[in-house]
Length: 395
Ligand SMILES: Cc1cc2nc3c(=O)[nH]c(=O)nc-3n(C[C@H](O)[C@H](O)[C@H](O)COP(=O)(O)OP(=O)(O)OC[C@H]3O[C@@H](n4cnc5c(N)ncnc54)[C@H](O)[C@@H]3O)c2cc1C
Image (cartoon, rainbow, N blue to C red):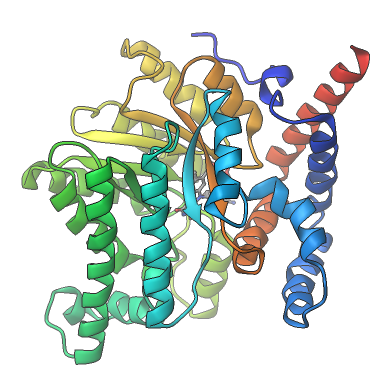
């Protein structure tokens, strides 16, 4: 197995030199925590005040991390990626807007995205955030109330609201199943995750009988998630369905730790990075060893984690394009992994959000914050970009 991520020509073949220079500028900027704090505080205010910064956002951070404002715009990016053997996870990037009509609206956009994905050769998955179709407060209530969780509902309005959330998700999964498109249910904060997990398991029980349509997400920065993955697998086997497992390390570490400290409960996050890495790699290995009943989507920019699974596939004599193993990185990050894996024939995709600029700002802010807290990774991206720019200049 000779997978390497060092070939910058493969990694950035799809980017013009101008694109690369913009990426270099952006990545250098978001390496600075001060710049990120400033940008994340000021941008929403400027947008609220109606100042004309759309053009600036569109040509910088939006272009780097987002497919476009509409499905049609994202289709152009998806087509470009397809010409390099890279697939797409499409994400309607609008987050956490409260209100039943907003939730119905998001549901419609997701169904539209599924219909669109079914017409494209390289969009096998749509990602769904439950906070796009359910009230945050409702999810917190359900997370906190054991009686609600066990099905004995003592709040009629919560009960009715949850029923509507279930109906939205069933509508999404019905279309996904009919069109053969996978649904990836995102993992969110621990204080709303329990009802998300319960619904994900319920949906997998219905839609994953013959092939995996629904995937739940496991955040391995949580110290209880490797055992939860194994529990989910046991439930799947007992109830006769296939498990869809999307593995991530997790995006809300600082927020989780701060809340635990503030509210004086033990942090649900591993004490250090090494423990997160250990669980992530063990969970990935567990999935690879149980591919008879699990489909794995490894969502990571960590080179070692991707190499480990590629090595495991080789050890088990699985072809690189074995359909139950899929790799993914965010659009705008980790190109050296995505494009070098695509060249070797692995199933690998970019997670591509789309939506109106104002609405995807929270997503962009998270990306910026995440980048500034994973300096090792962004350093590597910068080195790769500089190498490629130098290579092009020397030609
Ligand atoms: C396709 C895709 C889908 C995603 N979906 C989700 C999702 O549904 N939910 C979600 O939460 N995230 C999601 N993410 C984001 C993902 O969690 C982050 O991109 C990921 O955590 C970054 O880690 P990494 O595996 O790329 O590798 P690395 O850069 O090796 O790891 C960085 C991560 O390690 C963890 N970490 C860092 N320092 C410490 C420490 N001191 N102690 C403990 N842990 C530490 C944190 O999770 C941090 O983000 C998704 C990412 C991708 C690519």
